[in-house]
Length: 553
Image 1 (cartoon, rainbow, N blue to C red):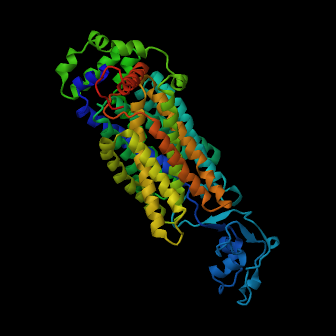
Image 2: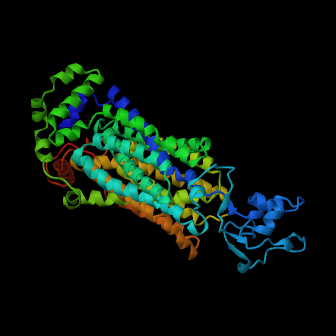
Image 3: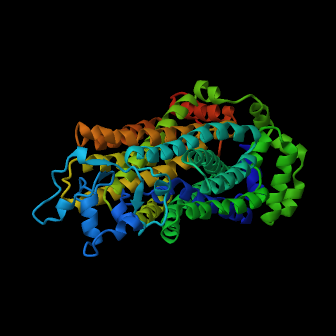
């Protein structure tokens, strides 16, 4: 693992790493706002049909002054399922007989009503404007709203597939810089979209870029940090998502117009694009893929920032060739997704880690939907999701050092699943206990996410790391897409959705026990490094073999 020694020489946890962590984690907070944005920008306000007696000044002039808005509403709009005004139908003609206190509209007939032919009137007390109100995504068009979120998730899935490969092919920083620009431009254009399909198109492009930002941020942090400090920086990266949840609730509370909100959360990425040119490309990736000259420049630059200029000046191309001869020869072999699935020692890691990421996406959306069903204030709920996540992730950092990666990965997923399963046994009347179990489950999901971001980088070599991360992101987004439809099982039994949401993370958590332990091991750079680790592990466990230095794997 020669690069680890080179990194220690130029500084593996110095001023450069601090500046890089700040520069990379701050955008993660704003990326989170993009993912959670439609909780607010596409919120469904209370609405009713447009009716002349209430919404047309000419018609109102012919109405007796003694009749107030409530009386006019009663004779114009039939009652809905919740006993409030119906949101999707209106009376064909004013039902003046309903003004008689002895007459009610509880037995109105479908024939006496019609759809909202003239549009809808929306309650603007909470939001001045939303995507739903702008394009009337209600009643017969209400399915278009979840379609928008599905398109966004599909964009992240496609982006994960493309950005994973392109990052291994063209570099981490280049793809990250492009993703910042694409996210800024697509988000800005989406705020001015003239039609709903155009809005969905640019949301897809935004999601594509979101995948590129998330994947390359984590990889750059890992590849520029020593093995001892990697859990710390990746926990900080994970906390960026938690603080992003809080930021989303705060910004949405202050900005109630969907287009302005879209602009506010997209504009910061123009600044990210500008300063991203200062970010250093991964020297580890450069050296493994043959970019010796540029890799040398990056190492010397980092040494200078960390106050080790003299050490950086001693590095030359010859020194790098000598130090990384084995890695350079192994790193030139072509690497692809097929390599991940066929190479001994990698295919099991690929399958099991993908299952864990799938369980994360599947379970997170299950818990989010369960929390939304509580009917709490959405601004406060959004903030609480982030606040609860923070101690869970900090606790994960401490437990990673004590328990290791594999046990904590398994335990966090199993805990989240058991909390959901336990809710199937708790009566709805015991709301406090159900909420407590939901919070514990959410904490388990947060811990699992933090552990997975660290674990996956340690499981795969540099030449395939971004391809593996891309596959994991695809699995997570696949779980996110498949998760919401599970609620349809509720028509067969109210507990069935929770049973499915709870069983998946439990099974995937148990499968995580098949992964090797990677605590305190340096990052593998080549496929040969992974196979050598496996051989050392096998030799250490086989009686009669020469005793090797004990290595935790």
